[in-house]
Length: 404
Ligand SMILES: Cc1ncc(COP(=O)(O)O)c(C=O)c1O
Image (cartoon, rainbow, N blue to C red; front, side, top):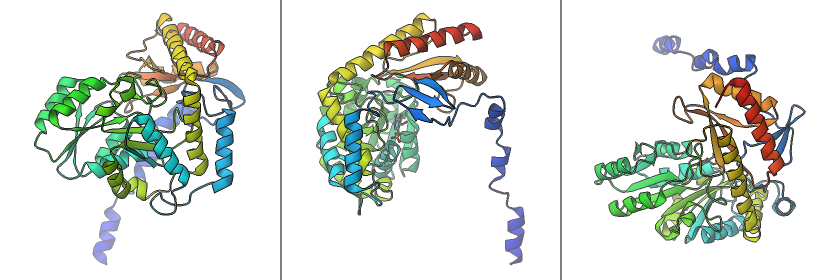
């Protein structure tokens, strides 16, 4: 008993760090805190925050499908047919015929044998990587991969190896060094979420084939955006038959929430029975699944939406560049604007926000030190007037703050 008391007295309070964390409160005090802005109303390309309208260039709603009447109606029907939630895991009482229909449709879009729907994209990466990369196996990742791929590796019993962004020589060295492993998975973003550049998929696939490694492509920002049918990075490069696994989220082009992985039938079957984030979490709600199915219908029927998305992306990127801003390696609807250090980024964000433009400040650890940026992203439904208003605001703020 005495020993327990002694130990208890010595133990630090696990909450101590919370009281010491002041950085965010300091920014709030100065009116520069950009996060958790409560949106009161939204009509897709514009939102209302504290009574003021802002043009939304911070959303991943690439195809502008969140407010499409057909999509809303399909979501409503599903909610009235099945109720508001599934109240259980896919594994037990949480599989609807809608989940299975979605899996068939996604497998067809990705050119795969099979697919498996999870409750979020984040959980998809956690489940897939932790189930496949077991003790003695290795997962090799580009250093700028999304956090969910990294977290999946941290949950896995195997080893995580990272290489410098886009450096195929470094990838080759990593493959050589780990040639004796009990299986290698190379996991990469198809479109890098903070840079907006497309992975050199042919280069990565060739290396994987040479070393007998398997490849997982995270197509969160590529599905619906890249490829003639919106099939993503592999479709864009015409190499769907050479990519082992493709992961997608529904929180971007598909106007919903959820995620999926597609690939060979036996791998999907294995993941169904070993993916802990699938088995131990409730499934995607009916309205969310129906939303994705409806988005797939619209994608098939209206390819002009994707064409318009790319026109809008080119328009905004070229406009920002001609104002003198640095959009780095962007080549997709994700267009980051270099914004200096953390302080400068917050001031830049606030001036644009007050000028009626919603952007997302991106700071370390989401991006490397000294490369803060305001991340803008374009939708198919932005009008040219809206994009011009965004460019006007950037130009005005850039001049005021002496940026560019
Ligand atoms: C590249 C990438 N992968 C995975 C995810 C996770 O997706 P979700 O938002 O569906 O959990 C995201 C979302 O930000 C992402 O950008």
